[in-house]
Length: 109
Image 1 (cartoon, rainbow, N blue to C red):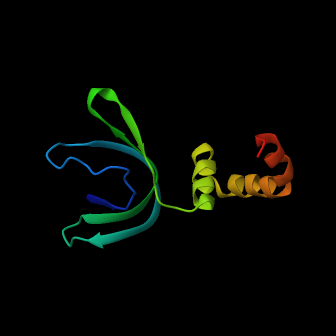
Image 2: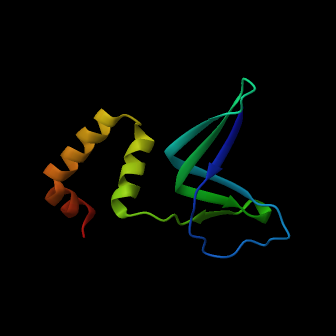
């Protein structure tokens, strides 16, 4: 079995191409393609949208890399990070919508 990933993110600075980079992240899988290799094995290609990325720089310094996506997509990702269940997501969103005025007052905006 072979696995492949593809996706895009917006970088604040260019990578130094002469060095290797360690990038960790949280991704939303948006599509899976299963290809039969005709030898009893399969190649899976995953399209992954980065939700949050982090690069480990020299000296152990961590840098957060901004990801593309709307605020609603980022909110969904944050909720799914807490509990990846569609029913839970629906309940949280319903409560946010129902209590939006109180939430805005609470965060003092």
